Length: 320
Image (cartoon, rainbow, N blue to C red; front, side, top):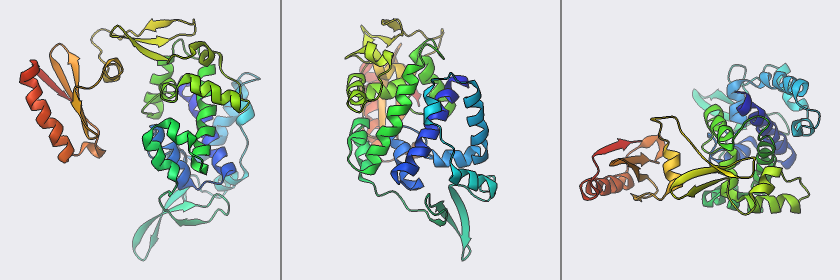
């Protein structure tokens, strides 16, 4: 919990603060923060509603009481009169009268509403129309390079969050994979901070930080033109604070599909499903569809898998 919350609290506060400063609606902010970054679709405002908005001041007080004097969180944290007013009037999220979102009843129908971050009034929720959200489907760099306010917002949040995470190794964790695993397990992120940095490219990230006058964490400088994770002779390695790559070891009997993915390409698949060779004559069929639903594209891959099993000598199939 400590590793995840040290990074996660700064991520949440930066995402909320920058949404106010950059003039985004809660729907726009959550659309940017959510799926394009591999974060649950609750985004940040939906997450605050879920855990309770009134918890935030207590968490902030704890952070300020215990963190080092020069910690980035101290510079980033700003009390929000808007949020304080919400708490005082009972708008504390799902457990209260409502939060950044609420369900209202009109003419016998349940209507999802969102709060206006300028006026405090509620209005029917509308999907984000930001072009940067669509650009995010092409990758993180396409998202943060997009010129609209969503792209600028994405960069502000990611630059602060990923820089912070990189600056905390080895203070809060011995390895980068410990940090990534903590964020995946604790905040349900699809990718941890260092996996996100690899998607952006550490060297590219470093150059952009320098261009904008932001400090570059030592670990990002040290990895240079490389990535934080690499596949070396079919062995997965991670970059350490010692300046060297180290083999990632798993407990006996533990096999991570994410390791298989980093080590090589899938042997069949499309946008809906993928087939992976797990070794030991075991094939894995992974679904990518929403709620693992079966559509025409999934059945195409299933047909390929049925052919692959006898052709390649597989003896077992795992469905993931």
